[in-house]
Length: 135
Image (cartoon, rainbow, N blue to C red; front, side, top):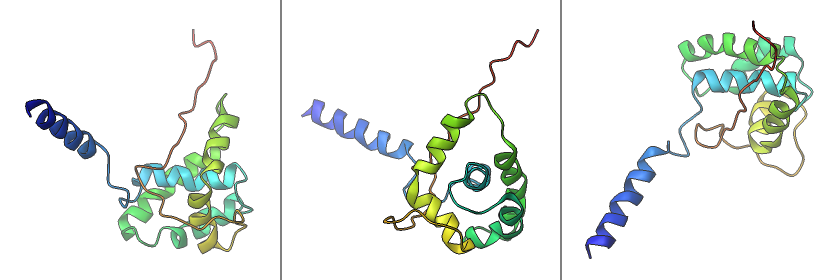
């Protein structure tokens, strides 16, 4: 019985560690993702259009968050890491989230996939790496 209770507590605590699936992605991660959708060619939305119209794709965020997001959109648009191909492959593979960005902006969507919330738990973004000699 004690073992079962201990397992129950561990399972409960593990569930608490993950954000709920309906929690929108944080401002910095959402902004970077918006930039990557454009920069990586996940849709046909170019950089100028993304910067001008991204608020349409994130209307469920507060006005302050949308304003703060612009700098992170710029980051995603201008990334040039050594592993950029890996970063772009991961961003573009999240089809329902790409469509959640592309649809409100009138961009090309990924066929056969419904849009879904870009949420904190399911959004995966590869960190950029540089392999240069920094001496």
